[in-house]
Amino acid sequence: MSKPLEELRDLLARTSGASRKALLTRLHELITSEETAEETATRIALYPLQTSVAKIGQDLKIFETLTKSGPKSLEELRILTKAHPTTLGRLLRYMVSVGLVHQAGTNQFESNNQCRNLAAPEASTILKHFFENGEPLFREIPAFLRNNEYQDVTDGNATVFQYTFKTKMGVYEWFSLHPEHGAAFFRYLALEQAVRRRWFDEYPIQRDTRSWDPEMPVFVDVGGNVGHYCALFKSKFPEVPGRVILQDLPSTIEHALQTTGVETMGHNFFEQQHIKGSKYYHLGWILHNWSDEKAKQILHQIKLAMTEESVLLINDRILPDSEVPASAASMDLVMLSACGGRERTMEEWNDLLSSVGLLVKECIPYDPEQCHGIISAVLG
Ligand SMILES: C[S@@+](CC[C@H](N)C(=O)[O-])C[C@H]1O[C@@H](n2cnc3c(N)ncnc32)[C@H](O)[C@@H]1O
Image 1 (cartoon, rainbow, N blue to C red):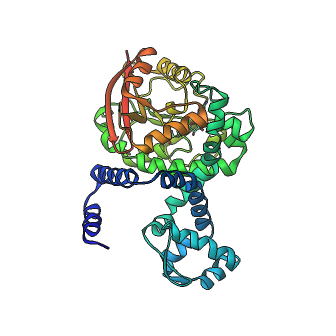
Image 2 (image 1 turned 45 degrees about the horizontal axis):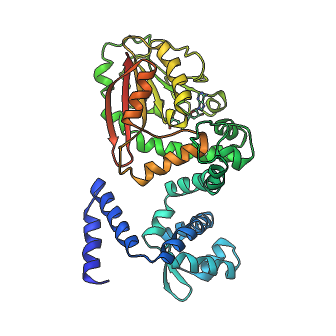
Image 3 (image 1 turned 180 degrees about the horizontal axis):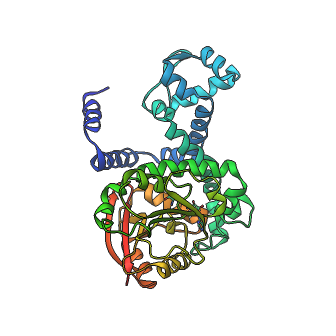
């Protein structure tokens, strides 16, 4: 490696957080700024192949084997994977060509950084979810939008999802009837929640609940999936008084985690909120699934249950007005295609909340790289 490249690698290794992300973005821009037309087109056109081969590498545990057991020959990998040596050799040749594994010699393979990354359990969760549930949609976005004359997409029952999976159902109903897809999504959510749990460190839950009535609900996680946040609330704040309640559709509640001190409740958030006067109503990654019209209906039901002391906590992305990171801009289009939803800027959040008579009290961006933030709102 030449000296300037070595210096660049050292710089990357020394940089972390937002600066590292910015540096990676600039480097990517630098590389693409020098590409020819053919290089740009080929890179973009062939990327789905890389996704598929990475999925095969995970299915055959090639990344895991090379990472955990060290270098392997083609013959050793053939015995472990039971794949035909010709097919396996062709797959490995491709993996080497795009840097997913390193070739140490003729028919000899070893791990590199990408291989080690793809061997991680979270990489398998992410890839499985997007491969099973996202990639089929991505393929159909162009045809769907063309047929739709590129109009605004707001109907979660008539978006790319229904077009792709040939169904009339919304995504969550469909997941409940297609458990393999649903399980891939739930595992991805649990992983994401583990990352987004950081908001608990930022928001002053303990300070604001010191004199809370233990008989009253303190934390209602509306659409809380199987209850990771409720479990975390109980373990992180065992001394906080009050009831902790997990709400989600009955088909999801069936799979809820069993956590001591957490009540579970089947609930449709478009219908009346029966838990009145809770200190906190938490909506984590809910409103981005829905159009403004639907989001208002959800907010309205919660607002009717709130008292002067209640706080609505919206845990969602808050997009900057410009230079939105690719991860957040991508999720916006995932929302469009999966459920007719959208990610929102702060101005859009303000408009949405004020339209139902709620007032933004505070906004805490707890993960600026991913644009994640907590918006607290009270009765207006
Ligand atoms: C994107 S997940 C968010 C889960 C969790 N709150 C989080 O922060 O990761 C959306 C959740 O909304 C639930 N959901 C969808 N439609 C619902 C409805 N009408 N009433 C209640 N929950 C619903 C789904 O089952 C799912 O668990």
